[in-house]
Image (tube, rainbow, N blue to C red; front, side, top):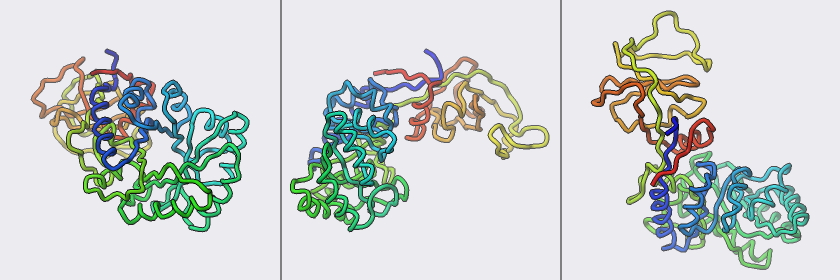
Length: 355
């Protein structure tokens, strides 16, 4: 085993995926499985797809390239850059959009590549990230897109909780649904997709509080951590440890808990503050801020206290641990969503598939 590494438990991910599919099927909702948090790792994406999700979705073109062998529609999640429309049409079947000028360029790219590119029009319901905010602009967008060759308006969607923290509720999601009929009258056909958000919308499924018109959710965090993201509630019978960080101890010494001498800036330009814990057993692990987000890792050993770290090192207080840690021992951590994202993105953290 080469450390640091993430152990990715495929069986647990498949279990979470199947559990979500069962939840969503009861209310006629399709899942777009978001692969960006694990950088579209091929085996993980294949495992999720094998469970029966309808779409794979990612916000990075490089990640979408990794998914081309999987025969289900791909969605580009981030609003398209005009400079990359050809790649987006080539590697994604569908993209989320809010700028008609960009869709016009997607139309030109689709015609060059001989494809029909699906568009989901994003509407801003108050979270103030992407999407059209004014009714007049929504209608104008629908009128203009009808005349674009190589483009099909597949549906409408929204994004909540990611920027403004606005909670998806029946009332604000109903506003999204109300646009459907009006747009359909303009374009002359029925919209296939009404995408009601992300993992924060999951909590509405339990009490059947989601509008019936919603038929797709874009789900990432709930797949890998088994929790909805509106209130952070863990969902019954889902795993929160599909991804585990493993790191190796490279030094074990008893030292003071406060540095000796005048305190200046640390390696990242911050002035550190220290708690006087007396003489402590300090373990240093071979992983650092270049590899992981030190604030997004949770030791399996509850008696470990993370002191901090540098670009290359993680420092821990293991004084109160029942286990006697030694140099060469491996320490295991759970990861938050941000923790999985950072560690997955780092080329210095190995990715190991386990079952």
